[in-house]
Image (tube, one colour):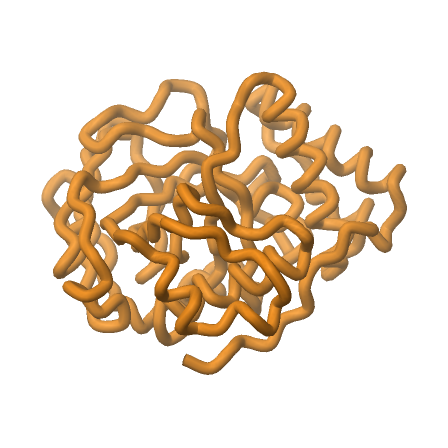
Amino acid sequence: MAPISSTSPTTEASAGSSAVSAAARRLQDAARSGRPCAPVRDLIGPEDGAAAYAVQADLARARVAAGARIIGRKIGLTSAAVQAQLGVDQPDFGVLLDDMEVAHGGTVPPGRLLQPRIEAEIAFLLGTDLDGAVEELTDERVRGAVVGACAALEIVDSRIAGWDITFADTVADNGSSGLFVLGPRRVALAEVDPRAVVMTLQEDGVAVSHGRGEACLGDPLLALAWLARTAAGHGDPLRAGDVVLSGALGPMVPLRTGARYRASISGLGDVEVTA
């Protein structure tokens, strides 16, 4: 796998601390009120990755201070289909917190989400830290850190009205994250090639999305390597025990209240949730 070139986010937001704080408050108010807000790009700029990740970090710190625990990361915007849906052209990442997980076969908490959509992904489970210098995080080392993979659903959401987002908007909004579901089957990488898996997502038994592992940046492990290097460059490396969502294997679809969703991913099994 060849490394992806990416400008890593920095800890200093180029838009300024007051703009970052204002953007974080706007997104927090939307989440608390259940009313989507205006985009935050008017505060931090439409493509300012440093400022956007600073907003994301502020929001994550507030969630942790309120009692949540960070348990991993999500990679977003890895599928060309999803990039086209949202009008962006590069991957991003967000944090996963323990209160974002819904049990396999469970039900989405009512009133939790504003504008939800659902997509199927691969979840990687890490057994060792991926820290140190960025150049030390080779594809081989990243692959060796994975102790298992499983089918996953990500229920994405946007606090921004009408999903009217640029790259900075979605990054600031924690990668437009909502909830996630992990399938019950854990598979070693020796038993499955993430590039070759085939995915079908069903809504009440009707197929609504199809995809393959290679739709995720050519290889979901390449997406994981991108994240490992980007996170290390940001000074917040991936750690043993982290769950990492690979990014979508196919187009996301709107989440319909009361519907049952099942993703089947060859070699990894099924994962289900009721909206």
